[in-house]
Image (tube, rainbow, N blue to C red; front, side, top):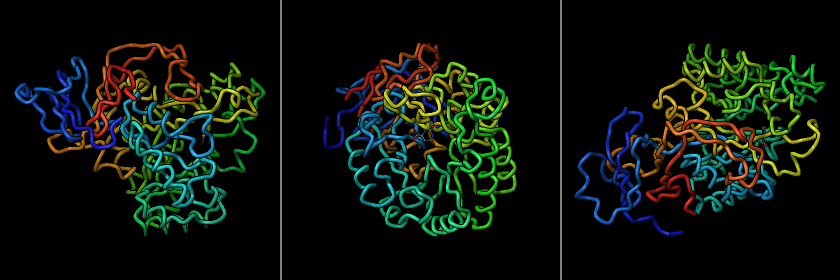
Length: 434
Ligand code: DOR
């Protein structure tokens, strides 16, 4: 591991470069953490460069995850910043936003600083989301300004929605004055209470208490109104129902300041998976019926959803080995998101990269370093994707410290071959370098 900037020259050779400006064939020369040149005749420049083969591959900006639970501080048995960042790098991510539902929660500058320090030597940039309320308890506003002073741009009580409309209004007003964005976990807790899966045909058959899609939709509706009232932007986390997405679609048409993410499991799995009673399929918001899955795909296709975000939620085996109603919700996501998008979505690679890289980078306030056009002078945060290769998910070989991957044994298309962070190849040929 190097402490200073990685200064060996690297040449990514033989790929097709894809970024927000379009697609072109070309090699990418990197030196001192930045892109030095992109073109076809870089041979003169490469003496001594480390060569990464990209033939048949897409060379894109590194992926950016708006929604990673890295569990540190407090739940290091499930994940650490180091292991989560390694999983991220293997998944093609050069930046992730660490969620604040740690123990203690990231609800003040001191804890945020600790996570930034842990992230400083990780294999991807670790941005931090701060909590909206003290202890994520939904009662008192957290000190948003002192966290914003550290560069934090997203705030959320994720895991909980902010239930109190008046408090949410005040939080939106403060956030907008600070130039930061609130990200809501949309769930009316009174309506969702006691539900462990989607309420519908499968919950009735299985005898597992459900939570209706309306628990999510009520808060989407309320927060669209509060965003209108305060003129503050709002970001919706992991939307999962057709009606939620339709509300966002209509609000956007009316000029609302709203962005939305969806999670890979909500376009690749349905609530029928719960029939196994396997707690690996327990997640919040829950897996939904096929009509909602189709609506999530449609929202990704028509621009209603701005980003694919993993909601990577590691849980230790002994926690997941519990009866369905007692197990914690959440599933791993960082190492499979790109492949699920390639496999499940009928979208061209430039649209997939918009959803996985530059659009989330903009929402997270990371666009200066991540997701930008691959041109001379740009930060060398890149990933190289083989869009054709097929592979079988082996949950025992994931870099995450946890094993709660719902795709074990599934054959996926598309895999990350190399990931370059600040000019350093942190993943080469699918292997983490540190
Ligand atoms: O399934 C989930 N797991 N949903 C959340 O909102 C929280 C997350 C976690 O932290 O495990």
